[in-house]
Image 1 (cartoon, rainbow, N blue to C red):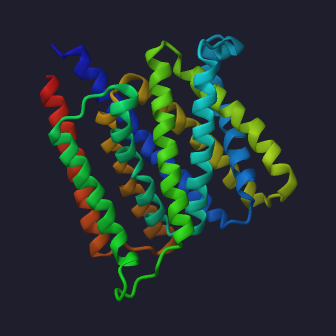
Image 2 (image 1 turned 90 degrees about the horizontal axis):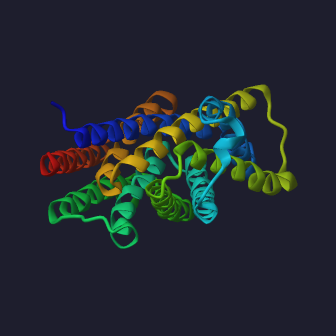
Length: 298
């Protein structure tokens, strides 16, 4: 007979893997826009076009009643951190190679693991700490060709790198807000709907002064960004409401596979030896943490 707790953990892990694929596709679509649409406008349509993907969930939970909340301050925190993080990561996708920008966003699980100890009271044993450090070293290995002089690789935009790293901290804090609300009984669909609606309002105000009318192709990309983001957001929220943050964090690294494949296919960004080595280190660390967690709780 299957342990119910183990089933919940496995389901949460599968949700994170699906979320990672969705947001990798979003990153590729943002890069395809080529910076032609202002950042605030991209964020606006990301939230606006995400709403139709969320409507079936909302209707299944009573329509407008799904917006009833017991945690208004929690939604304010989640939306604030989430929008700041979204802007930072979108900026990175537009100004850095896709694989590099994605690798930098993968520092989010590392920040999340660290922050979950004081803010959520999660227990992180020495084996998981070691595995997280190994995973971080994998990120450094991937970045090393562009950061070390004399390698012949392009040096990344320092400002963009810093913005993406700050966005990773913002994502981690947003995930912690989701976990807190989930522990307090806030439905996942309510969390996602409030985030999308607050994003539409805030980004509309920011986008108006810099508005650029999209072309037909840009409209298609903006719609895709929003709809795929909506699906990814549902998967992400469901995962972190039911699973321990430090356990799920390493599986965010699966997005590195998709980012590498998309970068290779669409922009000819074929991974070098350092990229492959970093990828293997990251995946190995994630699998080790998963095995340790499941074995410990079996």
